Amino acid sequence: MVAALGNRRGPWHGEGMPKLPPGKSGRAMPRLLLLSGLLALGGLALLGLPGAACLEVVSPLVGLLTDRRAEGDAAWPMAILHTILWPWLLLPAYDLAAPRFSAGKPRVLATTVFTVAGALLVAVIMQVSAGRF
Image 1: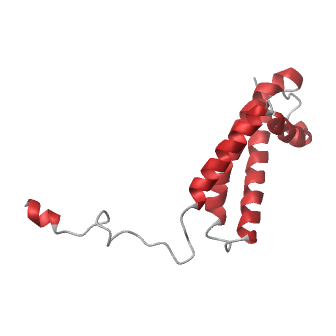
Image 2: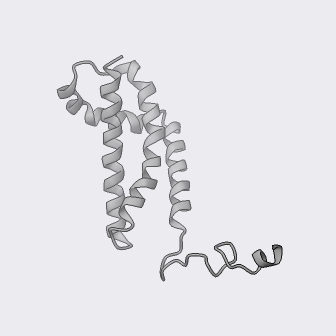
């Protein structure tokens, strides 16, 4: 029985392993993971200023949705949380952009647009939910 299983080819034996298309190195995700971590740590070093800037950008839009928003000192914990969260949106943004756009500048631009849109959406959700508590 063991000998029969040993002769079997499966994905763990090399032949069944999926091959990457030519030109695809598979190194993009580890690089994006490292970049996301560095951006999150850099934002913490800046004491949440990137998150505060994003929350200020969406503040007029949130003003249309609710009259109660976190402002001033009450907004800093939310800004720090946003600063930690938004860099990790690079990973799903790249997953959305990779199959739709060719490598190079179009994919980088699409990933950037998806990341910024996601960061703004997270900021709106955070501001609206802060007005409810």
